[in-house]
Amino acid sequence: MLKEFKDFIAKGNVMDMAVGIIIGGAFGLIVKSMVDDIIMPIVSAIFGGLDFSSYFIPLNDAVTATALDAAKEQGAVLAWGNFLTVAVNFLILAWIIFMLVKAVNNLKKKEEEKPAAPPADVQLLEEIRDLLKK
Image (cartoon, rainbow, N blue to C red; front, side, top):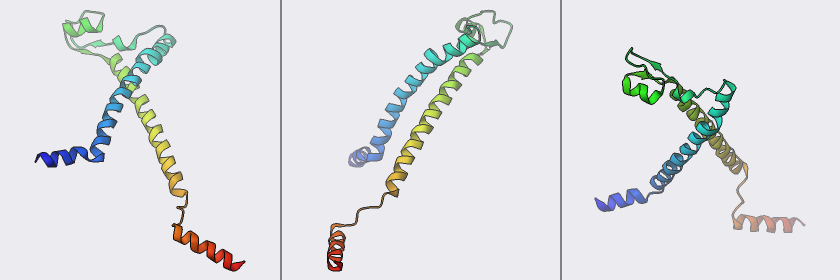
């Protein structure tokens, strides 16, 4: 059973997937920072200095706080501003992944379009044929 596990882990697909997950997690943090630290402040400035991540709607009368964290402690809230920020994160990440997949597919397509070089024996026979024609 241990040998089977080693064989499973050593397969290229499992290692590729592990590397992809690690890089994807790090990339997600970069996109989150880009949205939180660059895009949302610009959007906030356009809309008059609003911080969308702290916007919420109280779902019961016990919630009287104006800050999201304090409001969550008082009761149920609908944190629509945080959801908006996470949705923007997702859309940017999905767009970047789409562009990367599209670029990789274009590279694969270009590689497929190139005719494969004939084997050495076929090249030699073609050279002999061409010499005989002369």
